[in-house]
Length: 312
Picture 1 (cartoon, rainbow, N blue to C red):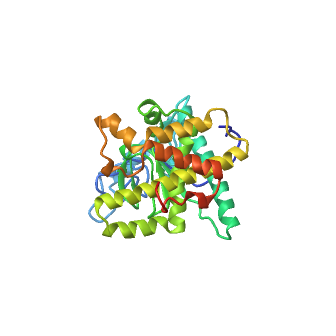
Picture 2: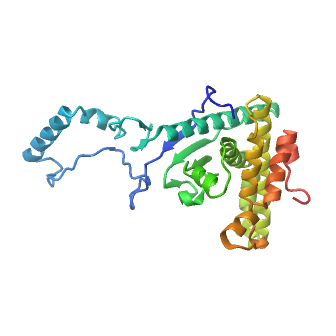
C-alpha cells in the first residue's frame, strides 16, 4: 500500500507501556502526579521534615548534574525519559520504542486517516455527519469502557467509548501464527474495527446488544456472524475507495483476502483444536469473510452490505 507522505490521523491515543495498576482508580497506573519521588519523611500534619527537604534538594542536584531536570519532568506529567540511540519516546507511554514500531504506528495513523476520509465522504453524501473514532494503541493490557482486555483478546472496538483498541504486537502474530503477512492485511484489521464503529453510529450494534439479551447462545452467535460479516463488507468498501485513490499495490487485495480467510471461524478452530463446531461460530467462516469483504470491495456501496437479509 502506498501510504508514506499521506495525512496521519490526530485521533490516536498512544498508551503503550502504560500497564494497569494493581487496584488503583487509574487503570494505567499513571496517577495525576506522574513521576514521583519517595516522600518517606511525611509528618502527620501533612508537612515534610527538614531532613526530607534536604534529601530532596540533594537528589534534585544529583539528577541536574546528570542532565535531567526533575522539575521539567514532573511538569510534563511524568512523561519525560532519556532516549537511547536508535529509539524514540512515544508521546504518552514511558517506554522506549524501536523505529519499526514507530513506523507501524505511523502506518496505523495513516490507515485511520484514510478510513476517516472514506466514511466522512459516505456520511456526507447521505446528509449525515460522521463522528470519527479514536484508536488506542496499547501494549499488554488495557482498560476500556467495555472492561479490561489483554493483548490475547486481539484488536477490538468498544461501543461504550467509541474507540478502537490495538496492541500492535498482534500483527506479528497475524503474520507468524496465522500466515497473514502484509501491510494491507494489517489495514484490513483496522478497517474492520472501524466498520464496527460505523455500525455503532447507524444503530446496528445497539440493536444487536439489546436483542441478544433475549437470545439463546446459538441464536446470538448467528446474529453475531451477520454483524461481523457486515464489518468485513464495510472494510471492503474502504478498500475500494483506497484503490480509487491509486494507493493499492500489486498483491494488496490478496493480502486482505488471505487475512480474512485465515481468521475465519472454521480455519481457526481447525488450527487450534483440529475440528470445527459450527454452532460456536460467531465471526463467520473463511469463505463468508472473504466473500463479504470482496463484495464491499467490488461494489463500494453501503447498501450492498446488508448481511441481515437472506443467507450469508
